[in-house]
Image 1: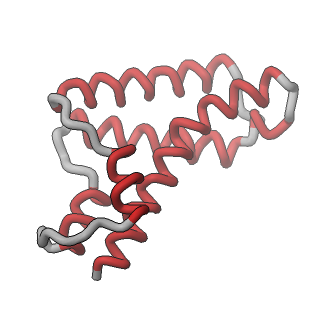
Image 2: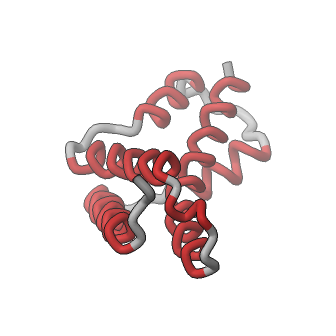
Length: 122
């Protein structure tokens, strides 16, 4: 099941890239006057994704992807593969929980500000 846990880890990383990179991509595309910056489907998916992350953090609910990955790994120690080691180090930090709640909510506010500053097409 380790291979499945690694797939979940990579999926988790891709979602993080979508959420964080998506905000920067919207602003860059808007500055370059690219029409997809106002794409309603992309923008709605983006705001829902960070909204879910922030809501889970505020409610102190563990991320379902993290829970699934941990379950698939069954907590047994073993050699870490390249993807597991580097993507895992990139995603998980040893900080107090309130730091993450604050960061997720602040990022949600930035996404909502962007929604109103760069309105999606109807």
